[in-house]
Image (cartoon, rainbow, N blue to C red; front, side):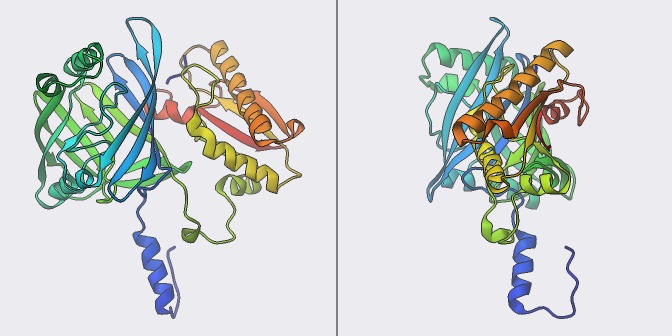
Length: 370
C-alpha cells in the first residue's frame, strides 16, 4: 500500500533599503494560521505520515490540529487519528519539555510543553551555551506501553503513567554553525537552517535538528532510538504585502511557464482516494486559477510511491486523480469538460523510493495544461 537577489544598485532610498533588509530577515517558516507541517514517521508499528496545521495564533496560545493514519500491526488495520493541542505562549518561550506525540485521548492543553518543536529558550541555550536540558515523549516500547495504558484508562492521567511516557537528559550542539536541510516549502525545495544536537534522554540515544528561528524552532528531524521523524513538506499562506501586488499564484506561474505544476498540498487517507480536509486551501487555489484562466483545460495526474505493487498503485493513482477532479467540479463548480484525469502509479518518480522523504515526494498530484 502507498504509505504512507542579490541586489545591485548605485543608490537606494532609505525606504527601499528597509524593505530589502526586512525581506532578507523574514522568517523562512512563519508561525501563522494555516502553517501546515507534513512529517514522515518511522516507528516499530510501521511507517506513516502526520499532518499538523496551525489553526489559530492568539496572544496567549497557538492552536494545532493533528491528522494521521496510524497502522496497527495487531489488527492489520489503520487508525484515522485526529487530535488537537493548544500550546501556551509562555511555553513556546520557556518550556524545556517537547511533547511531540499527539493523542485524541488526553487533555488539549499540556502546561509546560511544546508540540511542533522546542521553545525559544531551548534553542537559545544550544546556540549560546552549546547544551540544554530537554524532556520528550518516550519512543519504542516505553512510549507504546504508556499510550496503551492511557487508552485503557480513557485518557486519565496519573503521575506514574505520565513519567513512564517521558524521558529527560541533556542535548549538546554538534556543529558550531547551522546545518542546511532541504525541505519542500510551498512546493519548492528550500534549504532551511537547523541547529543539530545530540544527547541521551533517559536511556535513549537522541538526535535533533531544530529550525534556527526563535519565533518558530520546529523540529525538522529527530531520532529517539529507532523512532524517527522527518519534516518533508511545509506550506503556509503568503501574505500579499510580502509578495508583489501583481504576482500570480505559484500554481498559475508554473502552468504559464512550463505547462506543468507539481502539487504536494493535496492529501489522501492511507491507501485511499478520500481527500483529507487539509487539502482544501490548495483545491481552492487551483479553482481560482481556472476561474481566472477560463480558456485553460488541465489534466490531473496521480502519482504514487512504489510500495504496494504496480497494479495496485496504478489503480490508486487513477482514483486519486478522479477524486481531485470530482472535488473541483462539485465543490468549486469547475466545468467537468475542462478537466481530464490520468494515473501513472509509481512509474514516474521524482526521488528515490528508498527513503521516507523520497517516497513522500513521489506521492503527488500534477497538473498539466492541455
